[in-house]
Length: 303
Image 1 (cartoon, helix red, strand yellow):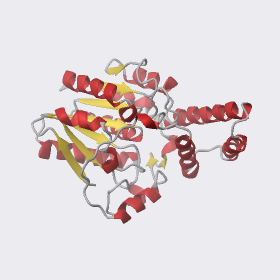
Image 2 (cartoon, helix red, strand yellow; image 1 turned 180 degrees about the vertical axis):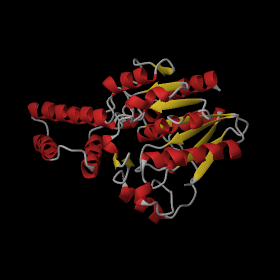
Image 3 (cartoon, helix red, strand yellow; image 1 turned 60 degrees about the vertical axis):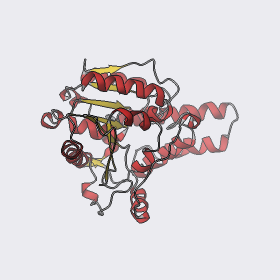
Image 4 (cartoon, helix red, strand yellow; image 1 turned 120 degrees about the horizontal axis):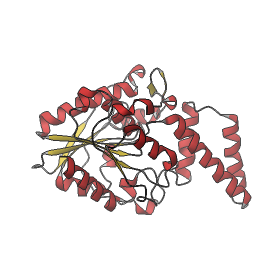
């Protein structure tokens, strides 16, 4: 798993970014202009999880689990303290990256290494999330059909869900494709700004092989990860958390999920439901100016 540490060389705090599942590539993530603000003040640790992005080594299918990803993260945390020479470490996990962070923090020994967690739409409860997400798509389909808009397309989606009621790996991937086609992941692509960064040379075949795996191999507790629900365990997490959720997130809909997360953990969660009203699943990409202000304030308060 390649690890890249960049940012303010004098900073005594590091942020470890945990990517959102296996279809993302940290070399691309680094291009989001949000990180240019964060790197001014802190060290930032970017890494591709096993089986994702530029990671190599032919990860075994049986090791593609949330539990193993959390064990991998612990090695990254220890590596950060050793190499980056920092006094405090913060986690920033998006979506399934948030799942990995939550799983990691359930262990009190590991939790004690971390000063705070920036939880950006964490996928801690896939059962409720996918039920809500599917309902949003079906409501979207009904609305468009009633307005005689793209009827054949939307009817085909209704038929697909009717024929595939269970979120297997194939259905999950198709669901993500539908969301991407309809701004359910990135609500307003025009708001996403990029910067130029240096990226290490990586064998193209590694990226290609990892993309082929997509989300298909991820398991939790021996089952495909769409059955995951960490809600009953979240009260074990006892560190400061900044919870940020895009109002237009159709993958992990904010309604119910954000409040459920906050209530399950308790007073340590800082959450403002009136923010990020025009962003989707990745607010740090769509509303980077607000996000960097919130992140900076959170880290400074808990460093």
